[in-house]
Image (tube, rainbow, N blue to C red):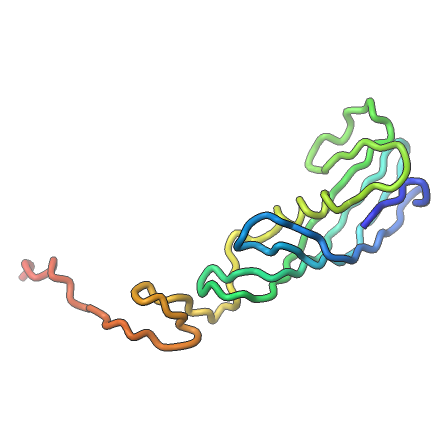
Length: 159
């Protein structure tokens, strides 16, 4: 997942990305993700802009039932490579890399973009029933054996 600054044509072109990306950002988050997609590369005077949306696939943990499942999520990528290292241009939402020539490794840009795009809460499906608050059983796999107490003694004093 590299961008070769010496071989990309001037103007607009496309860069195909595909490969496994190490995320390494927490025990309940995917350790790695398979990333694939296409970035649009604009090779302009003194700078190269790579933008687009790629898709990441990784193993996640359901926030309801704590089961593992495969999750796919979209990742927006925006990166600017400045060939003039003295310039302050492009310090906005894009990640900025200063490099005159050679290959630019996009793994760190993709890693940060994938982590930022990961959903805050994930569930294995809309029908996931989660865990029982009383006994902790996975309600998707077995029925709860807790006795439901419908009576609240605080209401006994009311007529």
